[in-house]
Image 1 (tube, rainbow, N blue to C red):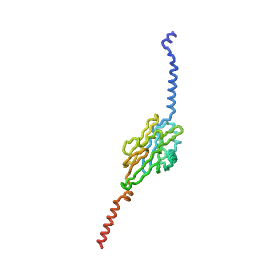
Image 2 (cartoon, rainbow, N blue to C red; image 1 turned 180 degrees about the vertical axis):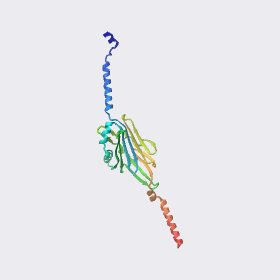
Image 3 (tube, rainbow, N blue to C red; image 1 turned 90 degrees about the vertical axis):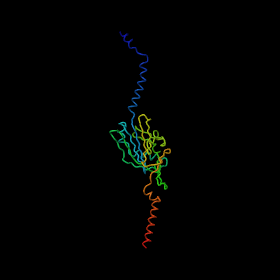
Length: 244
C-alpha cells in the first residue's frame, strides 16, 4: 500500500532545490518592499515675481518617515542648501521662509514654502523703448539633494536635471517636468510665470520673459506725459498773453 501511494505521488528529482531559489528571491523582494520608505509624489511649484515663491510638497510618505520628518525636518533646510550650493558658485542668494513647515496627518504630507531672490536667481531690466520689464529666471538652484530624514533622501540633480528648454509647456506661461521613472517616487515640478508674461522662452536652464512696465516707469519714460506738459504750458502762456 505504501508503495502504491508513493507511486501515485512521485517526487520529481530536484523539485525542492528548484523551489528554494524562488522562495529566497520572493523573500528578498518582499523584505525590500516592506522596509523601503515610499513617497508617492514629490511636487515642487515655483512662481516668479520680484522674487521666487517656492513650495516643496512631499506627499503620501511612508508613515514612519512622515512621523520622523514632522519633528526633525526644519523649515530652513532646503533654502539653506540652495544658498550654500549657490555660494560655491560665487552667487549670492537671499531667502526667507514663508509659512514654515506644514504637516498633514491625513495624507502624510510635509510642505515647505519659502522665497528666493538675488541676482543668481532672478534679475530684471527695463527696456525704455517698449517700456517692458525683461526678466531672467535662473533655475540651476533646483539641482540639490534633500534629506527629509536619516532614512529618506531625494536627489533632484538626478531626477530634475533636464534643461528647462526641454520641459513640457502645458500653456504659454508654465513649464512642467514629470518624472515617474523612479519606481516608488514620482516627481512633478512646475514653474508658473505671471499670467501677463509675454515673449516667454527658455534657453538652457534660464527662462526669459517680459512684463508690462510699472505706472511709474511709463510716466517717467513715456513721451506722452512730456508732450502733455508742454501742451499745458503752451495753453497757460496763451491765456496769460490774452489776459494782458
